Length: 113
Image (cartoon, rainbow, N blue to C red; front, top):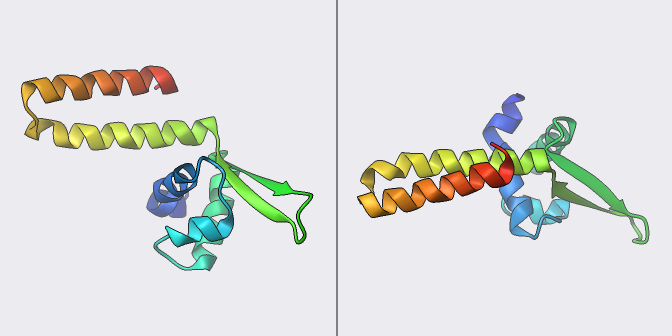
């Protein structure tokens, strides 16, 4: 996977999802930790990997592009969430750990992981 995706991919996907899975470039940039040029390269790499889709509103002048996360991108986010949950599970009580495991199983089933 592209180095830019490894470094900024999850953050970018989450920024898009945060806005209802339809975000403009300027909205994503608000949550992006690097330059606008880097964001442009990250979005291009994510699109090439099939993790996001870009759609242009033909009725707007000038044309406005919107980005959305694909099913493949949502699977990547879910995997990241699961990995994060596993990191915290040793600090949890038995009951909390069981709840986390149930949630992980739910995510795996929902996203086909």
